[in-house]
Image (cartoon, rainbow, N blue to C red; front, top):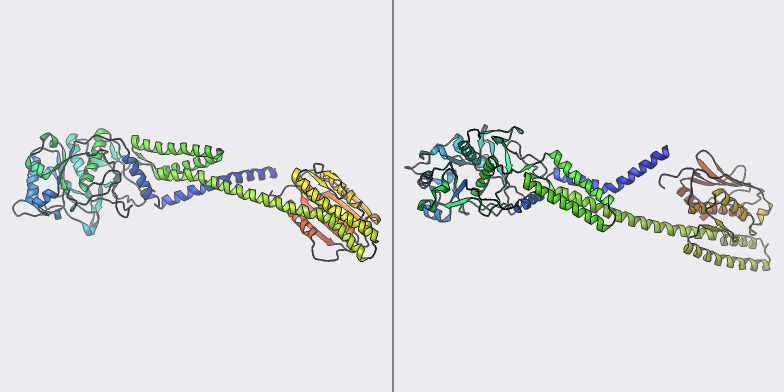
Length: 627
């Protein structure tokens, strides 16, 4: 049961390893959006969508009367009050629905004889003021108050160092100098006057879904709320996104001189909304609007009025957004799709194709929803998480596979070195050690010396040939010094017994002939071993027995066992000789410790009491967690 649980945990960890880069991307993008770091890019995406909408019809309900540079040269600046009154009287003869004066008090030169406050149709005139900042407030002309006044403050985005684009309209705000006084925009005043003349039920009221929003009849103006795309929007001042009318000349534009000269068709102005303002760029600078061509503040007011009236009377779409929860759910969903694409597709071409289809669906679907529903979705964050969730795991997978391949090659190289050492150590080096020992004791006749050297030469050459064959054929066998080849597919206890028997028969260890030996290897039932692990365990037994043959002085008994308890399998080689002569570990001991580590076990080689040497390697019957 524990093993099944562990396998399940490993599978889950493996899945999360592949999903982790995508999850990190999603988290970073959401964090960046929460702080407003993606705001400028999201707004530019909105501009691109709005720029590429189909062309709309002109709105004939709104007429602009511009006081251009030519008229300013003729009248002078500030504009004489009597000239404005004369213009308003002329316009009034055409019986418009309402007139909006987009000219501030400080732009009007006062006259002693003719006053704007005395305009005979003053109830149809709405004048302008600015109130957004207390330091720069400009009150309306004297004599106007209440519904005859509207603010004309604009809110630049500040998303471009050179140009501060305008994308939203301010509908109302509390007066910074008088917290109890609420000020409405010129556009709201114009719309309210026009709509109530059309239908008495189309009065300005609070919203039904959002109590802080404004509505006319059943049309509620969706209030822009703080979100990742507009992290700094205040909730105390209703604002709406500008849905610019897509037309090269969306409104009829007349000049002051056209009106004075009578070059006006009465049908153009009857029952229309007329907005009078200065269009000289030296006085009213050009305003950058990335969604349409650069324009002026008079046009911005006209677009806002047209947007609201068209929504109420023609059901033209108003731009709206989701709540933050839905937006971040949308971003998360596209990120998860990116992770899924990377996980389920195989091959670069298929992955890129699937990602391309997902990108088309994302951009095309978002554009369609904006076009048909007026819904502005967070397209850019979704694009980022979608594509990076595909790319980063692919890069991660490439790096991981590269590292894995490199590690495999290094492991194979290390295994080759170890196998070479074991083959040399348990064969030619043991022969050489025996030869040196007999030479020091003067026990080796010259004839026997040359014969042993010839055997050693053949043995060394045989090692090279043996390693070459193993590298070429990758055979699953073990070559012993006697020429015996063991099939490593056999059970471990059979292999160990063959190694034990073969090693004790070696002629270079004459001491084996006088030892009383006992040997017993229990079958290893629970833990499957790889071919390399079996080969290493066989070499370990061979090495341990060779050490007995070299170092076990005065030994009379040798016990070799392989037993298993409830959790461990233990290989023990014990002799009753004098014990270990040196505490410094040799190369064989170092390799035995490495083998124990790879098996998740432990190794010891120590002197026993009262005498003797114990060499023991134990490993668990279950695979360690790192394999």
